[in-house]
Length: 178
Ligand code: IMP
Ligand code: MG
Image (cartoon, rainbow, N blue to C red):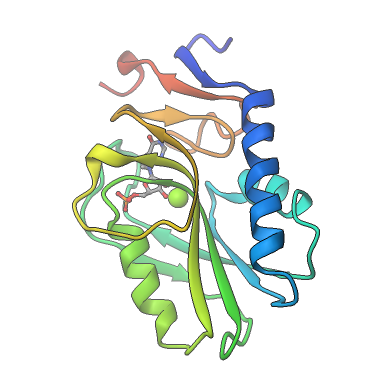
């Protein structure tokens, strides 16, 4: 295990099992709907890469970039949009793919933003949910795991751009960021 990690929350097998379930469910719910999966950069790219391979349906993929954290471990409370996808979303079924929901500010901002493009529907697929950290209510349609209020890294999630490459999801030692 990496020396900066105090505990592994979910190992590779556990993550893959959960993603298979999510992929099966999405494949049933979106059969013949040709959804567009929008991955929120950069944290969710690892999740997206595994999730699309667990889906058996016709779909497209695009990316968007939001930022609210900088190099800190707590949300700054203000969200900004950094990059815009180029898919025409009108009348498309959109699935937002996100690594983690914390305060909910990023996703509620993104939902409002995407609504302007008049998609047929928007659903949220989130790997990790810090349930107790929510400041704004957001409806999550597909969820991997609910976690405690701890700072986690790995499987795409970073601290100051580090640790995205860990194959598991682990709790970052406090001494790394305190
Ligand atoms: P929210 O707007 O507070 O819901 O923040 C969501 C974003 O914060 C996620 O997309 C992550 O980029 C980041 N984030 C929140 N908690 C963690 C964590 O424990 N580890 C790594 N990134 C996190
Ligand atoms: Mg993110």
